[in-house]
Image (tube, rainbow, N blue to C red; front, side, top):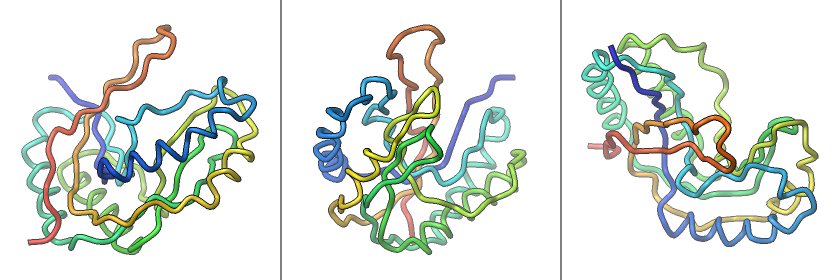
Length: 190
């Protein structure tokens, strides 16, 4: 039986991604930036729920439950805002806007996956973040978070819940990035 590595996400629209790409330019000139693995633009997303490897037989039920979760959630305003880090391992851009609705959508996506029969880790408090770079070891990410502190992207409407497949990079290939493909997407609201 085959499986796919999946997650539910909200994807920023093209213009918001363009703006973020422009803001990241100066970060690449900070000493040590070459040692970080920068996330390709195609990998920019706000993960709602990581589902792991999902057996194909569970997909029809997962699709219908995620569709229901999307329909029960109204579109909401969002913007890429500021930045942060998880220890010295990951640099991310944050979010601002209707975060309560974003968190609700994350809870609904998590519950949809669980009810579809996917073993899910316990749902923790959701920190909306868009991963920008990772470090193999503990890096000092303070200069990067400081540079992102004032970043406030354009306001956009989150209007879609996406189910994304990620194919991990081939080990040992320098610069190889995970590949992401939207498997299905459902409009929010009725």
